[in-house]
Amino acid sequence: EGEEESEGYIEVGQNDDDVKIMNSLKSIDRSDGDDGRPRSRGKSTDSYTITSVFESSSCIGIGKDALDRLTSRIAELNGEKRRRRNKLGEMGAAIASLWSMLRVPSAEQHAFTKSIRGLGMDTLDKGERELSRLHELKA
View 1 (tube, rainbow, N blue to C red):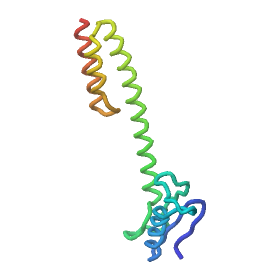
View 2 (cartoon, one colour):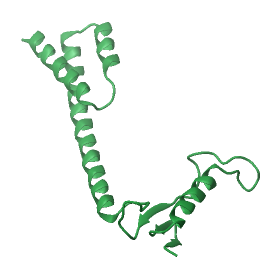
View 3 (cartoon, helix red, strand yellow):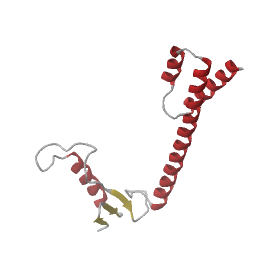
View 4 (spheres, one colour):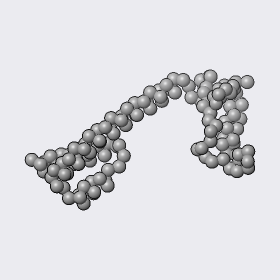
């Protein structure tokens, strides 16, 4: 009672079986495969999405509203990631052009390039500072 499995979804209601279901899913993930070899973590083709049909403090799962908020947040973050990647691409092209035009030594270029990691605000700030520095040298 309170649980229904279909197409990889398990709906969990408010009862003691919730814990049994979660423990079963965890033990399946840790158990050996049918051929006796351990299952590889992260490569299992079995996946489950736990959804809740009831809202309570003891309910296991995630509600539709929370899932909608998370989905929206992921879309926002992916948009920010694209924006930053585009901005860094544009800054990188401008920096490379100025390096070439100003004949900046390759050791200096390499040191700057090595200091850049990821799409964080620190990377954007370093790019902005390098562009400012190069524009000052150009003037």
